[in-house]
Length: 85
Image (cartoon, rainbow, N blue to C red):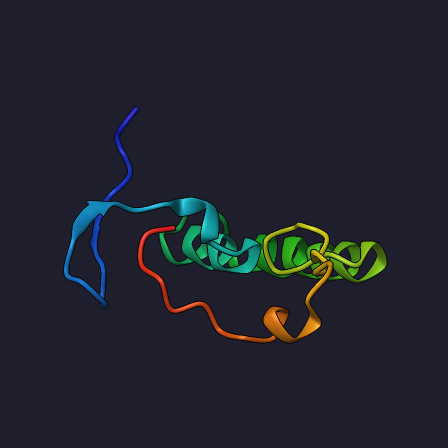
């Protein structure tokens, strides 16, 4: 198995292995279609089923249930500006 590709941080310039867990389901489907792993018809069918499943189960683009922040509501709305969490 190949290691994940390398990426460079836009904030600090550090080069590290990328975390592919942040790739959305639809992005993965488009990659499969664009690399001729699945046909256009297969893409349309799987994408349609994914969108129904996502809506029915209240999932985000990555197939996870959105996390509801606890406690400080003011802090929950602030953008995180740190590098490499």
